[in-house]
Length: 489
Ligand code: GLC
Image: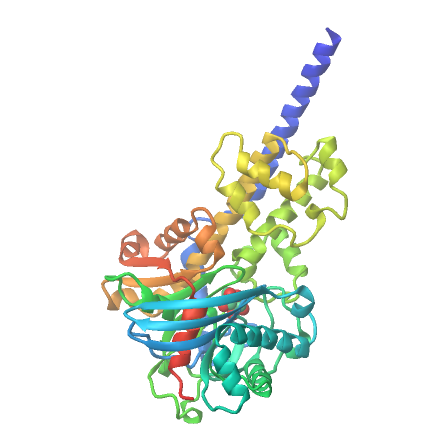
């Protein structure tokens, strides 16, 4: 009898505890909610901040970098080119055959850049890239390498997708403004990285000519224009929602006051693609939401106080935000209360390790529709090493969803900004947006939530029916090749 009443007391207690947990989780989730009417105000702020930076370079503004790329591809381009792609933790070297007729073939090799290279010396970074390029060429184009080393003049054009804020000086040179996405090679800031790489490739006698250095968003814009399904309108924006987030669109040079055409007689077109680096929208947090978790996350990044929009939106950060919330709830004594959990959650456990959880964690929760949250449970067991309770999973799910939905809604801001600012919907019946990146591709409901977000701006529910937004696969490879074709050797 007494055993029975003890049991009911403790289960009543547990019920109270889990109610408290869910209530607390909902309270935190509400801090991530985007209020009605917010999105268009944020779009207005985005358009104003972007316009300021077209006039002059502003230390804390959105960089709005002229890319030197003007022409959209026709789909008929042909040729074999080498593409390099450095955008996050992977470095890819590709050989791309543009076949015309919107088709292409590609061979590639991928390597994971070791952390000590990401945060080491400039020389070891350049050597690392050059070693991978040389290995790839020896494997895939051995005759070219033999001839090149024997003094032949035949070259391959190279397009380099370098997905960091690079202040371009020309189509194939530019200085690094700052690192993003966890890279931190201090001596590289302010240096012309593409030309330093070109020098090293020359020293190795590989006969590679770096014709264009492009941002992944510029590549995505061009690739989508090359490969988009028949019947779509012109591609206005190319965007990335992956480890980082960013977008590119075309702007009349007459509006880009900071670009002095007198100094660039080689630029003949009237429009130029702008690499916005919209990750730096609202670095001063005049309009972006800022929960205590956002603030905590920012403190622990090498680019503290910069790319503040990106830190609320992209793949590198969503798992970290959720981790910070879980640590908070754990420390309040209301999450992971079992003795097994407490035993595992030492200060060196993954829960306490910054950046140990990536976007796969909120995605696993967000997408789990099973009553027992089986997928989420498996994920926690795998990542943290213990069995959570159903109530704990439910509470984490509430927070995970709020982080994911906020990210997708915020993503709508610069897309709407580019569409409204360029008046594309007034000029064309239908317009197209190309996107790439793991978050866009894999996060449950991301595309749909962006579209919902766009409908909440001045574009409206009717306007979004005239927008096709879709994947541009491999903008970083094909796009770089398409750009490299545009410039003379
Ligand atoms: C970061 C980089 C930017 C890149 C984006 C997506 O925001 O600064 O250059 O385009 O990530 O990869």
